Image (cartoon, rainbow, N blue to C red; front, side, top):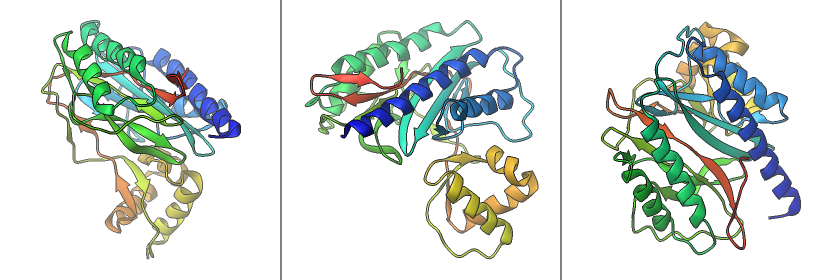
Length: 296
């Protein structure tokens, strides 16, 4: 990694962290969820980056991959709200998340995730196996009487690639992937009082570009040009496309682009109904002697 690259990784991490802290301060009872997400995305731009994905919120059992629709009027109430914010600077990404308990009833689940993140951070160094990190996360969560989410994990990050190797499990495994100096790693412990398994819901409103193909619809062609220029390989949402083209035109374009497999949908990831999921996440650089937290 060159000194110039390190500057950009640090800049992306700093902006992502500042936007996360700002976003968390907006999550209050009565606040409009869509407006909060819009403000967070705007803050990322004001700070000198672009959103690496639209601000994502997950209420209660929703773990990831949800952001409000363009016409959403829902407000926060007594939910446990997970917030995932990413910033990218010329393809260099900062990825972080936190959880806000508006109910005041589920502090133990939040504490389990937060302590698991700290336990993992203490292990990060060249030569450490990802399975060892998973065990530390699992142990930290289980001692609070809740479960890690087995089929969600942390991940490597490379330029323009949010989810890259290695995968960093949230449970003890025999994974033999080894951390190396210079790696960028996102540690993302999900804790829940549910089954510890998530599944995909049907309806997605977050998408990413897969490959360019011929497309007949003029709406879809225009939207695709905008997506390639504005977002490139990074995810975007219906709300962002509707802000540019209007909701009707955006929906028509999305339908055609999805049917042609030009876009990939990222469906919401949810636990069992009635459960609570909490997550805290940071991005780290693996250094010669340990790690450096970039989202700070």
